[in-house]
Length: 381
Ligand SMILES: Cc1ncc(COP(=O)(O)O)c(C=O)c1O
Image 1 (cartoon, rainbow, N blue to C red):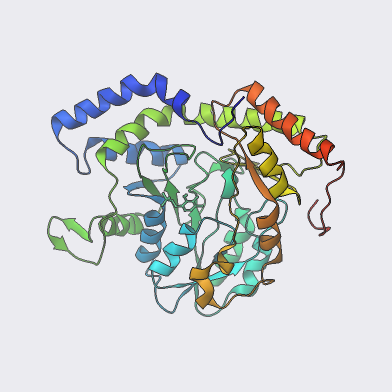
Image 2 (tube, protein in one colour):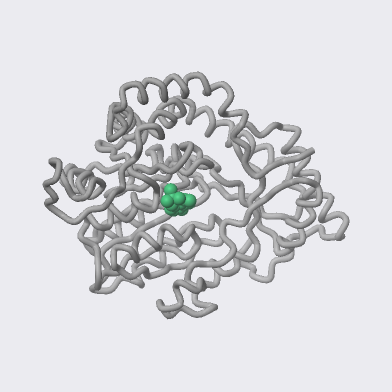
């Protein structure tokens, strides 16, 4: 059996005719620039998230960058975030000219440890950028409370959290603004690049809409410095066809996570911990083991393809050397990077594939005579 990390062919087949019909209509009309599909998607996806305003943009990195720019966050300002995320979170801050300040993660969930945020606030801090990693939201209430006390903006990186919920409210409606990615393998993915911004703030929405389109509200009137960050009409066609299925697909992912959890309960690995406040949508299904590299190689030999999200913490990346962090500065982040392994996860994964993966994981530990998780750090249970 062959189990890829992600396989979208089965998802595409039943949607193909509808997508092609949408392409045909858009192409026949030749309205390819912020046309009907982008406008409708802006209504539909912001409604889905429970947010008042939605702005279709070119990708998730640009979404986050535009939000920070619209908040006037730039040189001399600090933004508190995590180093256990995709580099785009921090690129968005650096491209705005601001400085990222890292806090460590909670070793259980691999999400921002919000209890560490207050200690990092300085007179230069302007915002906090929590990342709803793997499909699970950050513990927002205590974070919003600290942010309110210090007058900080809060921006959700919801790029991996389409449909995830915190206390019954969806990612994208939990803070001042949120950035989403529609990278093809996300829970809601385009067939190229795509991204989205949600907010309940009308002034901010207006500004972000202008920045997305070269700082203009009316053609060739550039009232502020912007960029080309527009979502294209053909990607919006794909996303509108897919959006009505998102909740079902998220449900399937949750069912798969449940089955993995049951089958792996006897294995000496740590399976994902979903906080009780959260509706986890399992963009990724990430287990932990100190034998990560050996397990990954073994699974590959069994035609099971896994991923590591992410192997090098951002504060230790070459491109971030200038920030001055050292190894040891973020212990939970650094330890997670050596132990995490993303197992195959997508809506159309079959039960027998999950059973095959779980059996292969168990075989690995049996063959190596390991029966207990062998973590050095007692924090990681
Ligand atoms: C956590 C996170 N933030 C930001 C991004 C950036 O999104 P994009 O690739 O659409 O620019 C991604 C996408 O991979 C992501 O996973």
